[in-house]
Length: 321
Image (cartoon, rainbow, N blue to C red; front, side, top):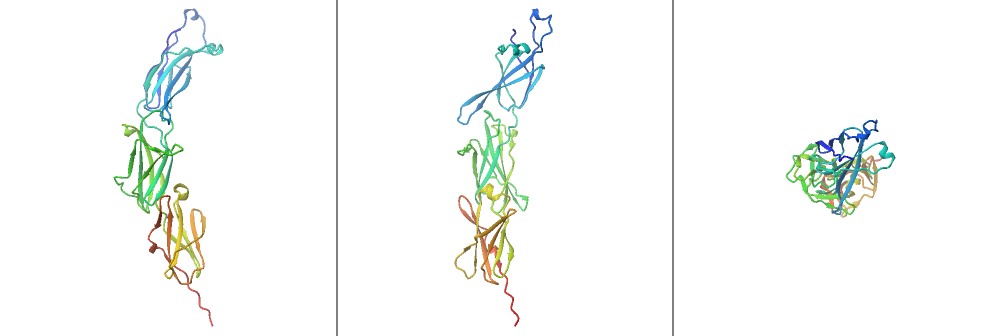
């Protein structure tokens, strides 16, 4: 009936190593071989809810050894450890456990889990919105987020500009609970790598990055993939899963130099991430201009200058007399 307590040996960002006490036997029990002692450690901590309230969480660790490490904890978090001793007979008789008053300690600074479910949606050729969810096991650690983007031209990294990242202490939320921010001043017609970084406030060196998402601010150039005297096949090679990840849409328009109004290419086919437009009923040996209208949520964009896409139909063969 002694008040036993845990002794903390070392504390890290994600674990607590304990030394557990030697049981003191009642004098009447010393002449018997008693059942093995079971050390039961109650671990409790506060977790923060989205509505600003807190909730007390509790888990239980059991061990027969006097050295024990509690793992998978979170940095900067205060834990309360309470100890009770038990054995086979205590469990068999369903006796109440007697816990001590508890020991409070806080784990050391360390890296948190990475932000999850990062998704990028392009709004215009130079603006994108980034969504993410907070890392798991964040508990009540106060954190900041950094959304970083790096643009690449011809697979070569462009030197980061001063506005290539945004620090967010209090991110906005969508209705379904995701965090989001809008990044601007992106470069047109460039591939862009975007990721979200999380770190405890005032401890920047303990950062953790999410997986990187790659988007193209505009698709690649149009390609003449087939031509005859009265038809053309125009192919577009967008980035992988561009329509899924960005909400991107497209319309191909064309006209000859003698036409006043732009015509819409309505016949399309998607195959292996390539988009092919089929244009028929054209005139032989005629130059046609093409322009691609990119459909973004905020506004449409003509990509790029229409003069870059000029193709000619084939001429008819002359019949022999």
